[in-house]
Length: 405
Image 1 (cartoon, rainbow, N blue to C red):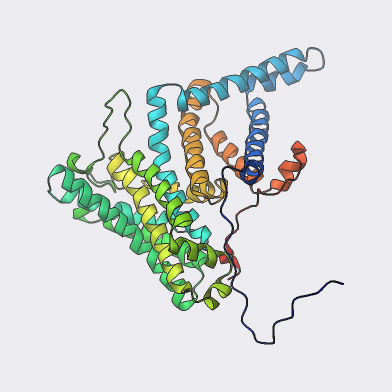
Image 2: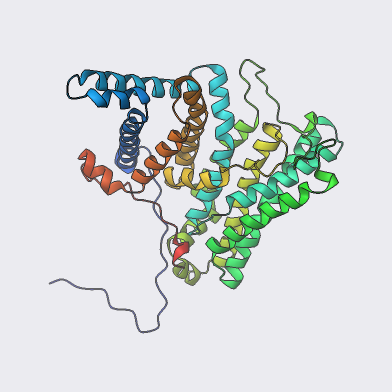
């Protein structure tokens, strides 16, 4: 005879929920399903991309006119178009020391901003505001970089701290609004993105941020004393900000998996009501999660301003803040996965330019590939069905609870 646990009395508080269990890397069953699905999504995206490449090539389209009489031309020309495009993509991203350096430099801001989105995901928040946090961080780092006159090492440290604080404050505001007023973080972060972009345009209209002798919305470049160095020289021009990005990944992993506050963050992300019942401060977790998310986005901004020595302009942020959401999703909201996804997207971005230059393939194809990869990663059941991957557990898709909270 089976026995059931007694039902809780009416009005009783919910049982505190444990956060998701830690992944034991020594047990392949804990991570192999996710690796299979991600690799399968990548392969399927490449196959679909191959069809897009083939049917966007003029020689392939021409061969279709006589496909019935001589189909071999269609297949050979398609294979040549796909091979030349994908080989150019690989060579342009990892085919030389300069290509690898460009990939690492491009990946660094994606990794940092993606880690910020990942941290918010684990707290049950959907941080759409990495773009705005990055912009504010860039404004602060750039201002210190091209207006203050400080000794070399001190100048870099102060400009770096300014960028971190700018992004952290911008993120903390939305976290505080979520914690104290219940304002939806998706709405507030989107609005703060527009506000940050407007602040940048407003600042570039003033003499302090205007490059002397230029009528364009462009600031001076930061002083050499405030830039990340390239310790390996011109032969491998990787700036030291890349090392900071890797260290940031390790720091986020330690914060989530080894710290007490990380346990609280994961518990709140699993069940905010139960965590509140257990005595955890949900408001504190939300505020700090968004603060650290903004800090990481500010670190991404310093890669652009202090690492690549770019001037402040309306186009400086690009789409890094929005790409960070894709990176975090592809990395399944784990620090290691986010770092690897950032490296992948950095390689595809750099390789896409080379692919267009040498093979004539539109660079936008890399955007299509990225979208397809994320699409299939977000639909693991579809990948398992297409590739006949047997269900063995794991491979769950990350979902922030911010939409329904």
